[in-house]
Image (tube, rainbow, N blue to C red):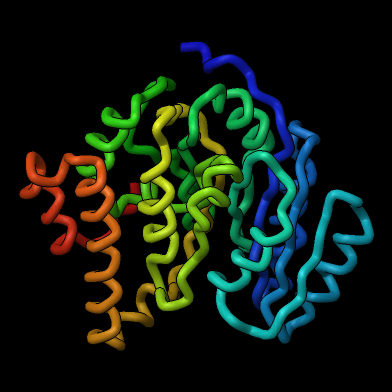
Amino acid sequence: MQPPDTVKGRISVVMPVYNASKTVAASAGSVLNQTYADLELILVDDGSQDGSLDICRTIQESDPRVLLITQQNGGPARARNAAMEIMTGEFVTFADSDDLLTPDACRLMAEAMGDRDLVIGHYFFDLGKVSTKRGLLDGSRALTEEEFLKELMQYPGSFYFSALWNKLYRTELIRKAQLTFDPFFDWGEDFAFNMRYYHGVENGVYLLDAPVYHYVKNPVGTSVRSLIHVAHSCRIKWRLYQHFKGLYQEKGLYEANKRLIDRYIYNVTLAD
């Protein structure tokens, strides 16, 4: 299926950086070498102590499309918030400093946007030398807001729906809703941000059946460490559930789908 009418506009790529000296050059390079040229890369060094800042400065000097913010360590939520304050793109996507965009990611998502409010793409799940294409919903197609919300309620904790990095967002909607990332979350801040963004997808969502990102799995992740703090993890889970439930309450879809929506509180995050 052909994508909607092509929409062009600058894409801001937001990339927090913390002690990523071994990977940030490749990650930034995957952005700057995109086949879509009208973009800016906003690097936010979050108090790195391993030489990442020097690498970021070198990257900035090499390409006028790169903006660099430095701050004391405050976590990825505050880093992304700092970047969103200065981004100039009509659209924005998010990348981590140890992952890679596919070469055509920005072009494919910009072309697919049309008059929709969001694009969601497939991605590669990289574990060691094995790279597997992932994505819950096959086939490129447009969904109305209600169709999208019905798909979302099936697997809300999946990377496909909850991650930041396989999506293209409209900056106008983020600013209209005054969306920011909440530093309360040790994990799940992407899910909370998305649930709040999904309140505004009145013009629908485009599903892109093409990989736009390489998610490089780190075997020792923050989600494992957070399990040590069980009480705080429970508070996080409950607050995420409230974001999810609140979306459907506002749209008038909660009562008819209560059993399915409430199931989220018992589910763990899924990889697809």
